[in-house]
Image 1: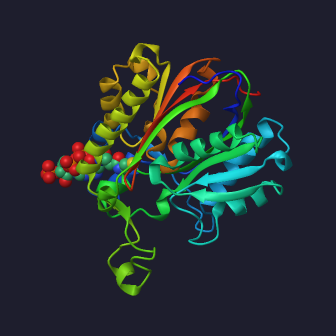
Image 2: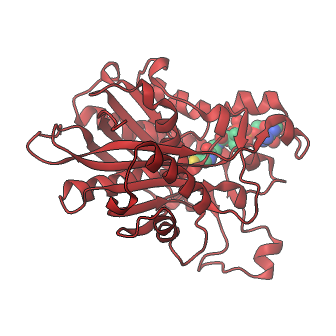
Length: 336
Ligand code: COA
């Protein structure tokens, strides 16, 4: 399955990230719902999350900040970007694609943009879309952004969800590579039987906004935490192990696991099943919580300096739908 170096691969050449300044700590949550710091830390690994408090700022703001960070740091001319994908489950609006607005705001006027909604698997799927476009030879620079303003769909009276989620965004640029580095393999799955276990029920075409849906609080994210927990562990570990087997790899050969940051216990359970040493398992959930489509790009952003050329990385994600999957990626040096 390893890429031959005679074909075009797609690799990440630049990374950007952004989290809002305002912190919502476990102590702050103690004042809002019946919970406590010890419970949250021991059950989830989360200490605090970042919240975009300004009601006038939406997911596009987060996505634009992360993209500008990538563009400015790497001296990239935004007009050279061909395509912009925003993975998000909290788009600015129902109909107008957030990605189109983001592309225009960052000055990528030669690009086209669309959104990809696969909940917490969104960024993983979007990376696959971007890699495919670059491998086809038709596009040279594809910007992939994972951004979510989760605070816009969280009920801060519901202690089973409000302790988990935060706001943030990360962005990566995919470009052609002729050394066989970058995106190697992927294994993606979905199962619609899980849709009621983790969803925002109203606001779509099934339950359009009405005074009843508002009264019922159906525009908030609801979940069956225990059920989602078990499904996330079995799905992500099965997908990751399938990727290892298909590429004749053992856990020893993996350099890093970058798994969706939903709950530290979920991440630890997967890494145990994959037989990975804990130093290979990257985590930043303590400081951001679950930022949905932004967890994986924020891991890339936070840990980018420790990756070396050729490092073997496994990505894994699980989200509402259900959607899930894993991918194998060989690290390529960043432009800067
Ligand atoms: N603070 C204090 N106690 C809480 C609490 C909170 N925030 N939330 C729940 N509890 C209580 C429950 O009421 C229950 O009390 P009881 O035993 O008296 O009935 C007890 O803690 C255990 O609740 P339970 O729901 O079984 O806890 P859990 O260990 O499953 O943890 C989650 C709850 C939500 C943290 C966990 O199920 C989880 O992370 N699930 C996955 C969620 C997820 O990742 N979603 C997104 C996927 S992409």
